[in-house]
Image 1: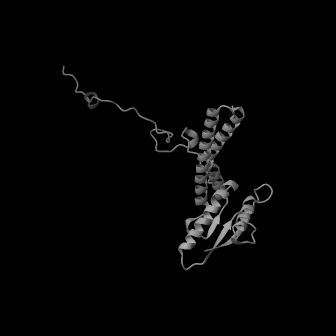
Image 2 (image 1 turned 90 degrees about the vertical axis):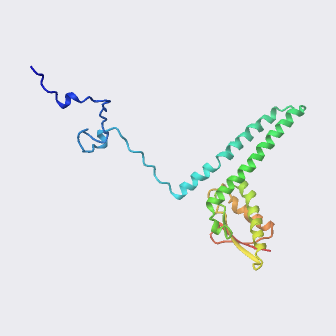
Image 3 (image 1 turned 120 degrees about the horizontal axis):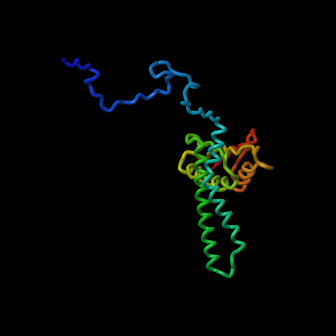
Length: 214
């Protein structure tokens, strides 16, 4: 008796069958219906709330000084060892002085970088020659940068032959966050008076109108 003919399923050999992978977004693998988030364990990424301009500035001010704070901690740590120094040991004293000098030099350079990043963020390039906002600067930083700014503005004024004077708005803030008297306001006022620069305190109580001459 002849054997019955083989069916197509019997004659075709399946090579490397692919295992069915369940789509996590489908409640039923054979269905096109999308399951709810409660039916599967696939979670959407958390939504980060958008920061306000004031919050963004505050975050920037904090992160901008991280490198400077690390150097200041090293200086503080090294200064504590000065009490245990043997004054008669010149080699030990010289090594201490060299380390301290190096750290202070690094601090000055990093502070200048901090100031430049701060000034660049607060002061648009288009109005930098007409208005200088000092918000976010500490007193130590203002003492380092403000004379440099005045010197730069005077240099630019000299290059313009037709101009004899230049008016600039200096914004210090009212010092509401300062303990006691306004820090930046007092420093700028004193600097302008000591250097004979004409100035007027504006009605807002937190800015000066200055006049630079050749």
